[in-house]
Structures are given as C-alpha cells and as structure tokens.
Length: 337
Image 1 (cartoon, helix red, strand yellow):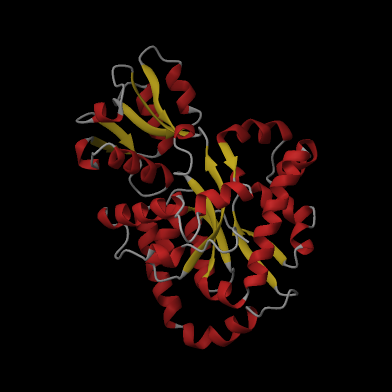
Image 2 (tube, helix red, strand yellow; image 1 turned 135 degrees about the vertical axis):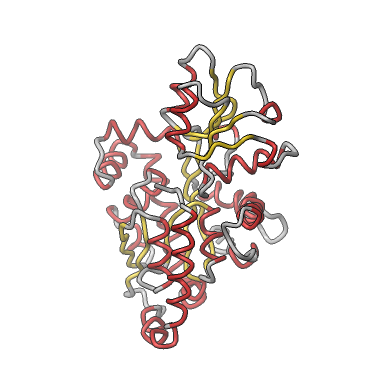
C-alpha cells in the first residue's frame, strides 16, 4: 500500500499543477483554515499501516487535546491520494515514507518532515540463492524488483550505492514485491527484493536465504509525518502539540502494552493477535530516536542523507522532474524542543 506507480505519479503531478492553477481563488479560504487557534481542526492523512498506529492511540487517549491541538485523522489509503488532498489543503499533512515525501516536494507541494514515526525492522529484505553471499554478488544476476517507486525500491538502490553499484549492474525483472517473492520461491529469478511472508518462505526452500533484511539497516525505510510548509510557519504551537502527543503515545504504549495494543488493533480493524504479530517488523521512534534521526544544527541525522539520496535516485530514474531541496524538506525544531 506504500507503493507508487509511475503512471499514477504522473497523474498526481498533473493534478497538482491544476490545483496550483486555482490556488489564487482558494488561497483566502485556505489561509483562514490555518489560523493559530488551538480550536482549529488539523486534518492528517493516515492509512492502515502499523507504523502509524500510535497516532490512533494519541487520539483515543486524548493526548492531542492534552497538548493543545485538535487532530482529525482522515483515512486515505493511497499515498498519492493523500498528496493530492494536501495540495488542495483538505488535509494539512500526511504520513508516508521519507522517499515519498521527496516526490511530494518535487511535485511543487512544499512539505516539511517534522516527526519520524517508524522504521522497518525486518519486514523488508532481499532473498537470494545461497551462493549469493553479498550485495556485490548480485552483479549480473536476475533480480525481481518493483521499479515503480516506493520504499523497497529506494532501499535496494541505496544498498547498491553503498556497495559502489548501480541498478544497471543487475538484470532487473520488474514486478510487485509480492510477485517478486513468489518468483524467487518458484526458481524464476536469482534474487528478489520483497517483504514478509516471502522472506520466511525463502528460508524454507532448499536453495534460498535472506541476503539482507531491513533490521540490519535501521533508518533507511522510514515513515515520517510531513506537513504543509505554510501550515508549519503559521501554527508552530499546533505542530509541537502533534509531535508531543506522539511521544506521549509511544511512552504510554511501552508502559501499558496490553491496553495500547487493544486500542491500536481495534482502530486498525485487526485482532490483538494480528496486531502483535506485525509489531516485530517495525520500530517506533520515540523522542530520543527522533533526536538522533533528525540530528541538530551542528550534526545532521540520517534523515538528511536518506532524503537527499531519495531525491538523487528518483531524479536519476525519471520518477521526478527536478530535485527538491533537502534543507527545505526537513524541520528538526519540534523533535528537539
């Protein structure tokens, strides 16, 4: 659900352009809706991804109101639909992967990441034949990969870059992550960039293993909260309230796991057992984790490199037309307060 198709992205660019064209007629109403009053309703786009679940907990336990902000979580499953809604100011921000926020900025929709939510901790990975023992061993091999954009694609390109390789060094077979896993288990490719349950299924074959999983690369596949830049400038107190409410939700979940899991599972339409089964695949970012990930004025955190690399990769692959400014996309003020 966190994937973006190239065709869909082009459609979003077109819709964003249309929206910007009618900006003059809607600006006044948009500005009125972004006043600094704590009574203002801040609408945030969300989907049923486990990494976003603590936002539901903050809502249910009243943490948003406690910190002076009235938040309405608006369910919009598609990241591209969330982007379009934010461009029209129907929502003031949304949650998605860092690399996807890069696409938003590239579509001339000013956005700043203000909070890291979660990182993949083993839910994504590369499965390969046992004789392939390193990323460099993938050179010239047939690798199943979803090249339409998204977290897994970005992660794989990042790992190639870290090993001095390019996408052209491997023989890419374009298919969805689920199909990629099935193709590997069916012995149709040498390796596949996929996710659970295909990582586990690969280990149960006589010929495959997990070459690398996301638990070894924390901070690369990360979801963050991105808000409209104009909203942030006009409403710093509300933004701080959202960030502080998230931190309180994470703290509450750690101290009261049974109650928290029940609330989050219910909000996501799952049983408690189903919700707990997915928890090991993600790590939620608390205040300390955010401060490390965002860094300070003196020392940049990993989010700066991830955002910059995503912009480079998407431009290189033709998924965006221009490279947005990394500096304009990251605001570490709120996590460091």
